[in-house]
Image (cartoon, rainbow, N blue to C red; front, side, top):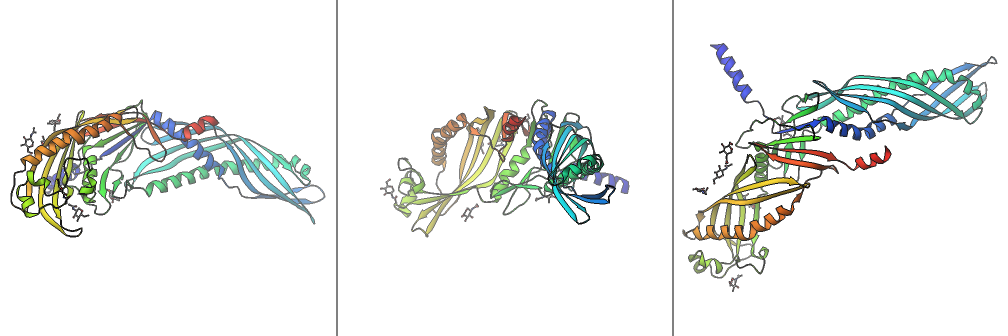
Length: 476
Ligand SMILES: *[C@@H]1O[C@H](CO)[C@@H](O)[C@H](O)[C@H]1NC(C)=O
Ligand SMILES: *[C@@H]1O[C@H](CO)[C@@H](O)[C@H](O)[C@H]1NC(C)=O
Ligand SMILES: *[C@@H]1O[C@H](CO)[C@@H](O)[C@H](O)[C@H]1NC(C)=O
Ligand SMILES: *[C@@H]1O[C@H](CO)[C@@H](O)[C@H](O)[C@H]1NC(C)=O
Ligand SMILES: *[C@@H]1O[C@H](CO)[C@@H](O)[C@H](O)[C@H]1NC(C)=O
Ligand SMILES: *[C@@H]1O[C@H](CO)[C@@H](O)[C@H](O)[C@H]1NC(C)=O
C-alpha cells in the first residue's frame, strides 16, 4: 500500500512542477552576435591582467647586476573576432587565435653603488586561447563557468629604453622566456575572474523590476538546454506586485516554444505570464482612476453633473440638484487574457463608483456600476511597430449597489457602448494602425521582429542590434 501511496505522491508532485511561463532561445546566429559584442568585454578583461615584478641578476664577469622589471601593464590588446560554437549538453566553446598584447614597464638595475633605470616595451604575438563555458542552473538562476581553458603564447619581443639600456638587450632571451611563461599562466585565471564576475551578476538577478509597481520573477524552472544550434532558457516568468506580492488564483499553462533558427532570439510568453502581469497591476492598485468633470473636455456632450444624468436616472437631480459628480473607476477582478491562434481575447471586469461632490472633501456616495467588457484584439509587428485592431465583443453593465434607489442600467449600457464604439475605440485604433514603438532595453533594439499568437502563448522571433554594432564595424 505504501508503495502505491509513494507512487501517487510522486505523480502528484511531478504534475505540480513549476511550468516555465517565459522561454527564450538564443540561436547560432544570436550567439555570433553576442560573441561580437563580447569581443570588447574580452579585450577589456585581457587589458586588466596584472603582472608581478620580475627580478634577478645577471653575471657580467665584474660582478652581479641586479635588475627589477616592474610596473608592467597592458597598454594594448588586439583581439581578433573569437570563433564560438554551441557544445551540446554543456555550453559554448570559444576560441581566439592570434591575440596580441603590448605591455609597457619600467626597469631598475643596481651594480654595486651604481643605480640605473629606464623603461621597456614588450610585444606578445600569436596568443591562442581556448575555453569551454558551461551553462547550468544553480539555485534557480543561470550560472556560467569556465570548465576548460588553455592558452599558449607564440613569441615575445622586448625593447629596453633609457639609461644604459643597451646593456640589457643582449639578455633579452633570458627575460623573454620568463615573461612568456608568466603571461601564459595569467591569461586563463584573468579570463576566469571575468567569468566569475559575470556569474556573480547573474546570481544577483532573480527578478527584474519593470516599473514602480511590478517585478518579474526570472528564476529558472529547469536547467538550461544546450543544443548543437541553440541555447534555451526556461524562466518562471511570473509578475508580482511590488507592494503586495501574492499568487494569482490561476495556474501556469504548459507550452513548448517553437523557435526559429534564422532569428537571433525567440521568446515565448504563456497566457499565464500575461495574466500574472494583469493580476500584479490589479494588486498594486494601479488600475484605479478618479475621473472628475474637469478631466472631461468642455466640448463633450456628456458632463459629470447630476442635472445631466437626470435623463438616465430620474430620481438623481431630485435628490441632489445641479451638483458635480466624480467617478472612481477600477478593475474589480483580474483582467483575463486568452491567446487563441491569431486572436487575443481580453475580458475586463471594472466597477465605477459614482459620487456627488458637495464640497471638495465631502463626497456623497450615489451608486456603483459593475461592468464586464470583452474585447478582441488582433496584433502584429510590422516595420518594428506594434500594430493592431481592438474591437468590443460584448459589454454588460449591472447596478452593483445603490444609495439612491434602483434604476435601469440599459441606457447606461447603450451609452457606454456608443461612446466606446464611436469615440474611444476609433481613436485607439487609429493609434494602433500607425503603430506603437517596440520597447528598447538599455540601448538594445529589436530588428526584423515577427510575432505569432499560438494557442495559450505568443512568440516573438527577432534579431537584436545595439549601439556597439556600428562602433565595432568601424573598428573591424
Ligand atoms: C521567484 O520564484 C522562485 C521559484 O518559485 C522563488 O524561489 C523565489 O523566491 C522567487 N523570487 C522572488 C524575488 O519572488
Ligand atoms: C482606489 O483608489 C482609492 C484612492 O487611492 C482608494 O481609496 C480605493 O480603495 C481604491 N480602490 C480599489 C478597488 O483599489
Ligand atoms: C450642470 O449642467 C447644467 C447644464 O447641463 C449647467 O447649467 C450647470 O451649471 C452644471 N452644474 C455644474 C455644477 O457643473
Ligand atoms: C470572455 O467572455 C466571453 C463572453 O463574454 C467568453 O466567451 C470568453 O470565454 C471569456 N474569455 C475568458 C478568457 O474568460
Ligand atoms: C480557443 O481555442 C481553443 C482550441 O482551438 C478552443 O477550444 C476555444 O474555444 C477557443 N476559445 C475562444 C475564447 O475562442
Ligand atoms: C454577453 O455577455 C452576457 C453575460 O455576460 C451574455 O449573456 C451574452 O450572451 C454575451 N453576448 C455575446 C454576444 O457574447
